Length: 131
Image (tube, rainbow, N blue to C red):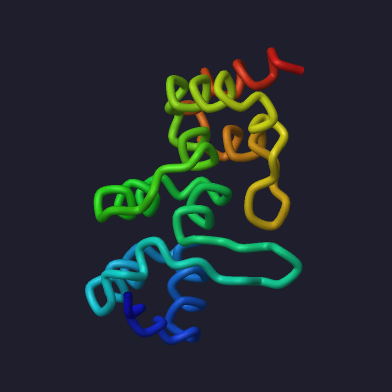
């Protein structure tokens, strides 16, 4: 099977960087290249970050929801920030080590829940109850 061509690295880098704070630019870039939705940037040393991961650890709900609406793969970190307690519980029940797995830049799951504010309070309380 022939692999499709790689997305230009500078485009992936910009997309992930902008997903930390700039919804308008994220929309423009995704319209330009829809396959960016699940692209990851390699910061080095095993630190990979997707646009969804960027939005999740910065508490950018509107960016995360836009990405999910456009085909981004949900993960436990985005679920924690968005307040999806059912997803977080299911993941931790299936794989207990998930509660201590680091996200992008080594940011803990608990921090993602904190970044979700009031909407993620049930997730934060659940994670805190696990110790």
